[in-house]
Length: 419
Image (tube, rainbow, N blue to C red):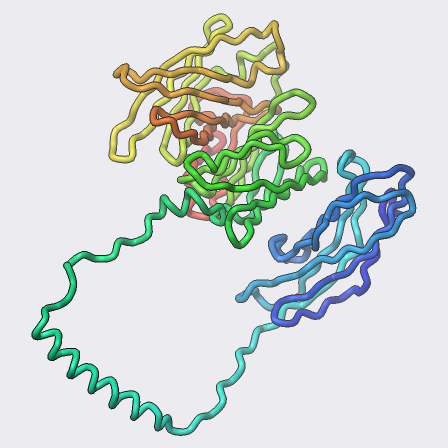
């Protein structure tokens, strides 16, 4: 029996035409207060969430005993294996995702092998004889002109489009499904870019708590457009699209005034142990060595504690070989706000040569049994970049993590428990 939402599909089975169909649902809210209700499609039996989309608006105001209709579009892409798939529609109250939600019945659909239309038989193309004759005449005339006038070119070849320009203005490269950690809990993230590549829709699921957060952000282009300031959900503050490592996404969020970290990869991260730290043991968060990426460049981070000061050593590989090492400190006073001790802001690191300054705008060590560190740095040229680190395997740590290598493009270091 539903607790808050009665969800009834119009049909139990869908018929796809050219891989497309729509599922209609009637939803009645049976709670006792006015809420913002969100419809969330869920892929089942091997279907992909990317095939499903609720027709706007997916979030609506609903009063007690009010009924509204929702429609879910299904688009199975070309090349989808033939077989039986399914979906369902879930409903959740935006302001109470942990308790006020219900799952709808299963709706089945079948993907069949697409058949290309057979070409119609045609006779001999007599018109082609005429075309060939014309081409020959033009070729002879053109060859004579070429011999008299030269090749007509200046020897320059057309330059290929610079991929960096595409990175700066188009966010479509981040579309897809990611798996990761939400401050130590299992989570998933789906990013859907519009056709123009200037708007992103995000669907984040806390898999341990069965809660979903939706949001949309604009992608304006430019050097720092890959770092987006929210909110675009109920708690997110910063979304970091790693420009040179598009398999990686990190977020810096805040919930009830407390900052926390999120980290996602296309292949996903798996936790294989860990324990939590108390607020008054904040020093244990930072102590250790970490390895990861600074905007796609291999990096190593070392943090030591002296009193209430965090000493940082950051080494970043250079694209043309070698590396640059930056050092600096940041004072942290646990007496002011113990819940903020896992967040480090405004640390200025100087290169060993003394000619460059890198600023840690925000660096956050993940709590709740996680060994991740994520953040935003301002490079010496003023560009803001994302950072992701994981605790090194040879350093004692609260837990061990490893990357699930589903796609070869994921280049984070793998950490094997027990090694």
